[in-house]
Length: 114
Length: 114
Image 1 (spheres, each protein chain N blue to C red):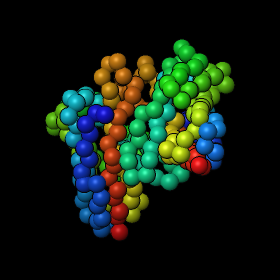
Image 2 (cartoon, chains in turn red, blue; image 1 turned 30 degrees about the vertical axis):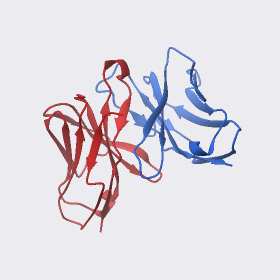
Image 3 (cartoon, each protein chain N blue to C red; image 1 turned 90 degrees about the vertical axis):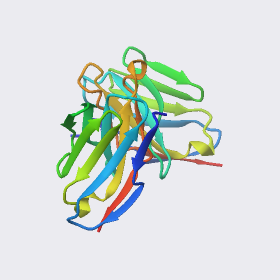
Image 4 (cartoon, chains in turn blue, brown; image 1 turned 90 degrees about the horizontal axis):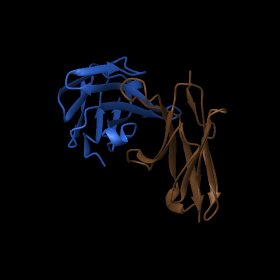
């Protein structure tokens, strides 16, 4: 358990509004990831971070931006939410060197865009 | 292009019997494989993993088998218990690549009937 907290856990918003999801970790892990989970698609990587201020795109990054100003916080922003971004969002961190290939997940944020 | 495939969306077994979940991959660079378990309204939790230098890894009731030539892995659960009912995700990574990104399959819903 990497001490990952996602907030909010649930959010309903309207099309066109900006939304920010927060991921907070207490393990001082360097790598952090944002995924979305949709029926029939499994988990797909949106963005990831390999250090403070170091981020890169995943496979489904369009419409999303991220920021990492502190090791413990990784923010996912939907600049102008669309109905296609209704999903469950998971944050993950990568374990330390002995578990370097394992990612540990938060409990998720369920986002509905109406 | 789906690099990790779980071709069975669902599987139903009787309590006490063996559950076998399958996963195929196409990327020859993948050399580390993981299984995650996910209950509703929770984040995925790491279950078991295997490196490509092995063909089998056991942890209690869970065993993962890897067939590199066939690019196929399977998760065996023996004996299956009702608490094992969950969605199981197969994931793979190129551990020599950058940033330890995982590629996930779409998941298999396992139902263990009492």
